[in-house]
Image (cartoon, rainbow, N blue to C red; front, side, top):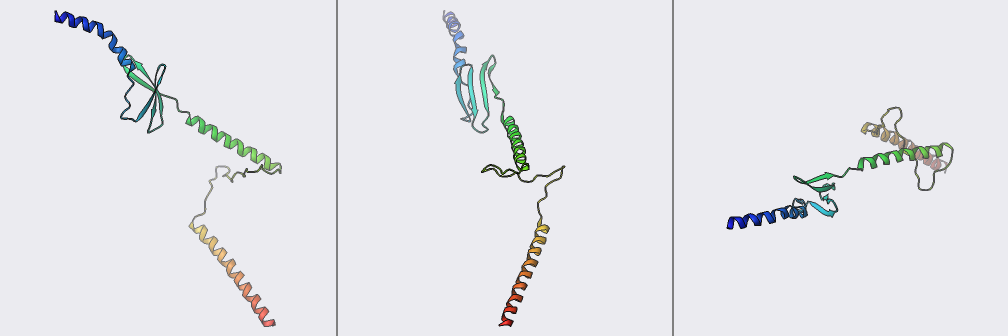
Length: 153
């Protein structure tokens, strides 16, 4: 008698068990993920990486599909707009017109595959030696001028 009662109880409650499982959200891995209920599942935000995924109940459990990353598309659009902006500035300057207020001319870029070479320590040493020679000549010119002024007086 008890085994029949148990069998009836299991038969009555078994169909409701999956319904309770459907309402439980996927694991949040200790708070790493933030889940927001949606009509067909949960929207999962990864707190570490910022990745967004849509999690839905499947026959075998929960499955999360990552939302497509639009960052590459945005970066390509930014690069395209920068090139277009540089071309427009060059066009304005080539017609002898001033750039609008707040717009700076584009920095020089390498042409024909050349690389832009920054000065190294040897270049800086040569520049400092040149400036030193100019300074020495300037000081000598001042000294000669002072001697001429004092000799005339």
